Length: 295
Image (tube, rainbow, N blue to C red):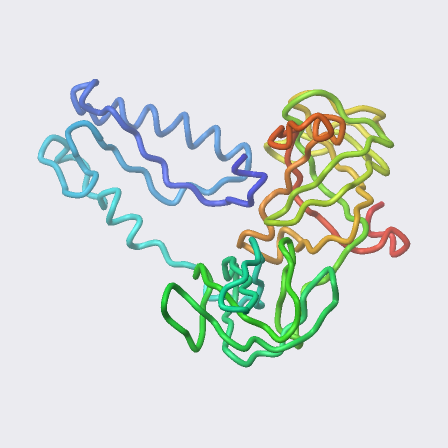
């Protein structure tokens, strides 16, 4: 799962040190095994912390029970983590649309970037363009909203649930096919299967065009090429044909729109099991097959 969502660095926390008498040699032995395991999958261990969550040792405050440990506590380590300063484009995912005082208010979350009142935006997959007239929270009007803010917006054009909008200078891109790294959690998946993909608030029908090959879901290394079927708990690179879908290449974003899409079977949806989860997909490329990037 860590590989699927793009995590490359790890903080190793060894809990229940009280159960082994706070022994340093036990801690080092455990850390050695974990670091060896993670290095096989190209993870980088940035810190190792011995704690006892039950007694609070090294969680928030340093403890005298492990005076051999001179590093930071768990909370101090979290406080020292520096977030990426990379400026990402505006993406707002519409969760739903409500009518209030004769105004249509689209509610959702700013997934990346910054939204200002008066911004000219493009909504996809509809392709509609317009201006943001108001940015609202409960009983308040805002001049701007940043990534992570849950807000309501009033625009001079219609927005719908599932829409993703961005600035007209850097709008979301709609795709009809993409290459994805899929992990199957249940059942089987074959070439030609019709499924549903869910990404953020979007839900679209999709078809498996080609199963390029099975892979190790933890390392991404190819195992076998051109397979006809993917079985439960297996992973594969697959070319999907989809209804118009806004989705970002996984390596380009680190916000919600790059989170693996959810696979569900249409047959299950027809009988009402709309929360049935079949697997997850990480987008590798959204370039057209004709450009040769899927080969």
